[in-house]
Length: 193
Figure 1 (tube, rainbow, N blue to C red):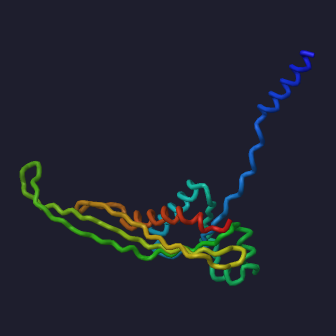
Figure 2: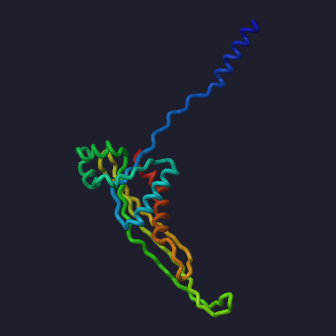
């Protein structure tokens, strides 16, 4: 009798301690970058940061298909055509993306003041305050229907101070990286699930 209770208790304990099977993870929607326009250096910085931010966010998968030779207009015009089917096979995703980087607007204000070197010589120093605004437009198309969704407009900004003559990384690069960060925050909400 006692052995029977002990056996049933052990059976209950082993059943209760068995971890439940993990729930099937829902696949993340995929965005495929088909084409992009803008200055090469800024575009490269934007796409790299966008991909990094989306990957870190974990809500959307990102693929860069710019080198595929596909044209977004052609794919959207005939979403069930041979070209679109071949593209979807090679680059699976629910949303096709086109990026347009407009030229950044850079404002520089200069401040000049008199100073002395450590040796006591009088020198004139110049400090520049730099502000950069980089507008970016993203077009999203449903890969299944070719229908264009709501466009996403973001503006990246960068502000910093530098001394005259200092060579730094292009201020436009920092502005486009900021635009990519902002786009990566908004993009998951606009992607077809």
